[in-house]
Length: 68
Image (cartoon, rainbow, N blue to C red):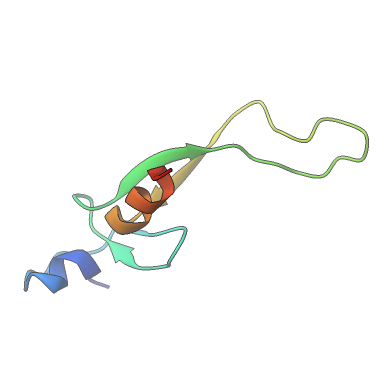
């Protein structure tokens, strides 16, 4: 699978991840890493986990995620 962002500018690079939001394949240069809180229903117990998860996104979704 090749990187979608690279393909838009007529390059061919192997994808290393898939955007968590839109599902597009991205190479190491275009993969944007962020953290996400894990939320799990636990009845009356704790809902948000102590450790954050890794969230990989494409540049477009990362920009949208950070917009107000």
